[in-house]
Amino acid sequence: MPKPKYHIMVCTNTRPPGHPKPSCGSAGSQNLLMALNMGLMERGFQPGEVLVTGSSCLGPCEQGPTVVVYPDGTWYSQVKDEHVALILDEHIKKGTPVAQLNPDSVWA
Picture 1 (cartoon, rainbow, N blue to C red):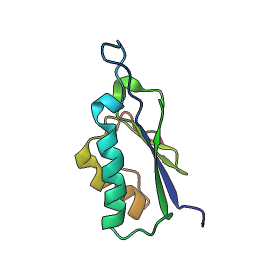
Picture 2: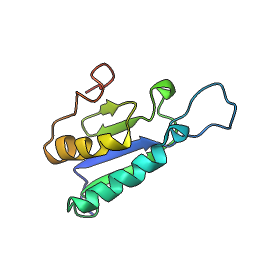
Picture 3: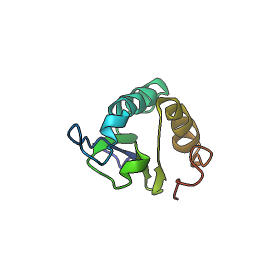
């Protein structure tokens, strides 16, 4: 398998009900994971060209769901389903991180 151009990590960590700290999983990150994979297929990316992987806790739980795009090291927080197209079309297709999503919490 050739080296992927991008690797998208999606925090899918879920804490038990009643836990005082929020989690990306309870904020809908599983849907994001599926939407990113489906979006790549819809855009004609070849298998292995871009990897999408679920991850355990990435850290900023209060700002979840968190998505990280490597090799750029760009972090997106509070990602919603409607942001998937922007991330795929701007960052993955064009190579430009989507700063307007969360200008205070996108780190590149």
